[in-house]
Length: 242
Image 1 (cartoon, rainbow, N blue to C red):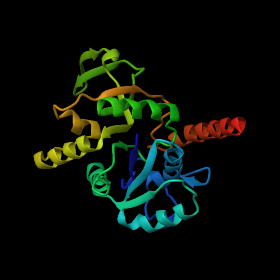
Image 2 (cartoon, rainbow, N blue to C red; image 1 turned 30 degrees about the horizontal axis):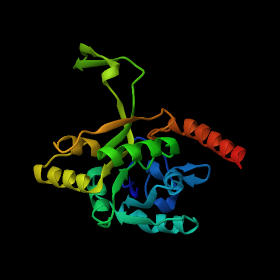
Image 3 (cartoon, rainbow, N blue to C red; image 1 turned 135 degrees about the vertical axis):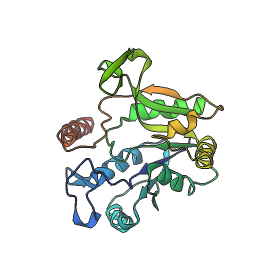
């Protein structure tokens, strides 16, 4: 199994509303510092330490590429980490990164750059599922009751057992994902995630692998406190295993 990982990191991160290192250019959540390192770097480290991952491609805004390249020079990754220019949307950024992958690529995993706490056990499961079925994503069942509304009036209560909250990584056979992006571009379809593009096709059904609420997507200032806690727990566990 050979997995290429795409990290779309060209977003503006307006919900975070905080400053980041000046060299990063603008206030973007993927560059917020967590224990002295940008969140993006923590995410790259997690995938670089996975034996199934063969390369990592980060899609960035043009003005951030040199800064991130300099940041990566100090790291000793055992596999290639490439930087490409992203687009104005997540979909465009992922498509730009897809275009740089070699013909020998088997599986492509797309992961939010601001989810640095994905667990290796979950990665192994979603990679294996995608290898077998062609398409798999990570997701969790919502703990709150979900209501469908029109304006501010409830129309129905939706059974939670029929719902999942989609997370990342979302993993697909390379040829399948390329076709999904091509068809979306031809149809003018904009999806909220990669799975929504593949779901439009008849070739395969997308499987769901159970994730974890630890797979936090850091999108607002209050998430940083939880991120610091999770990172401290990871570091303690790492020291304990040495």
